Length: 570
Image (tube, rainbow, N blue to C red; front, side):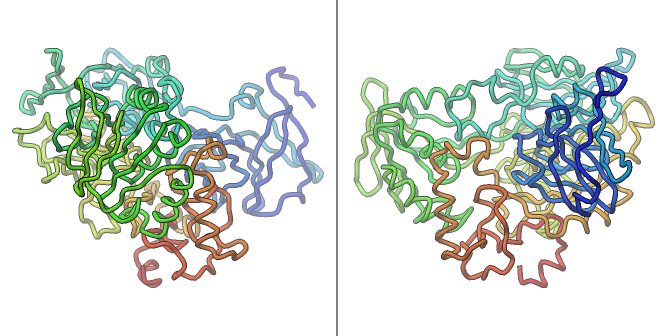
């Protein structure tokens, strides 16, 4: 039945006893799906899809008042719909629920039903506030930092400066869906940033920083002063160091333009991929039915050997071999030869020669911090900026976040590590915003933006720490409660985007891994983090059957304590 307000609708969705305690049920309101949740005998109604990639939250995991997305692990508060854990940037809508005579009714505004995601309220730019937060970088760390500053009430000037041509975009899709346009993978549209009072400077590469004068100099000759500085310049693909590496059509995959260029050059041609980890294997998978020939050169015995282990890597290699991809394992590239300035041939250390019209290099990444060389900022031997738990560098009013940093990790007993992962970068961005606004001179005045309302977080990492970050975001007033709620909640790898699951060339690969590792056991999922999301996780699986490098089924458990992990021998 429609309410008096034409913009609001109230609908009977089910009977009270249709939903048990702790259960999730997708219902329809005015033709739109709504997620009905019952927790401790109380009902909540929420948007039914995760704002990240549209996963059905009815297949998620409910733990206390926290609902976890079944695909990539984003968490939402069922009372408010607020996002409590990344990778989603947005909240979900929350609707009114009433129960009368055993019947459950949901009341919602039609506009909220049409668009189930919700953006948090933000403060606006106030010209009276002269404080300037300068964020170097255009990735998710800088983006989340900027948005969090506005959410927490900062009204000063926020500048994001990046050397790229685009607003922040989903970098994970560059190797998974190479036929997309840059605009298709934007995380935020330019008009969204404008509305938040966030200045976004493109093609603005920092070349030096004067920490004493609190000023950044850019490639175009301009400069900008700051009160607080965030360095979130990310990382860049490592380059080949062999003769001929400077020939035309030797490519790295860093931007949407790189992705489009590689797709165009490789279609119907001879493609050589150097490196058999995530970038190399995903490019090989996507181009397996498009390139003329594909040769993968890797110094290890199996793909993904360090990240996922030889068993998973072996299955991955076999699946792509069946699609015509040739692997040259335990081999190294020693030279690239060309004609008229373009690459034509790849020469291996054993003397073998591979035809190469285009070469894609995926041999790791390096922190983008060269512009800080010669300054007093602390970096490690790889160039990563050293930060503390608050993302603070050794320079006052200077913070760093994302792929460019090395930070203390709880599960490594506080030892520093560089973890190149989207959710880690997002958590860094939020944490750095808290620190920026509460540092001397930060925020809207002497009191900052209200530190008591900030989140505290602990960054945790699984034993195979290059796969999935375990992020524990705890509100200061209920840390213990949320930590307990996390036990038993499994998290999924970001290797493949579920949105393109069925059409992706690697779809059969993960199903094959499941059959191979489970040895036909019904319901068993030894590698749940690599399989279609939503498959059940059977804790009775035998550890010895699981691939090396992939945690033992429960090793991706969110919020599990060190003591609990040690008790299981992890």
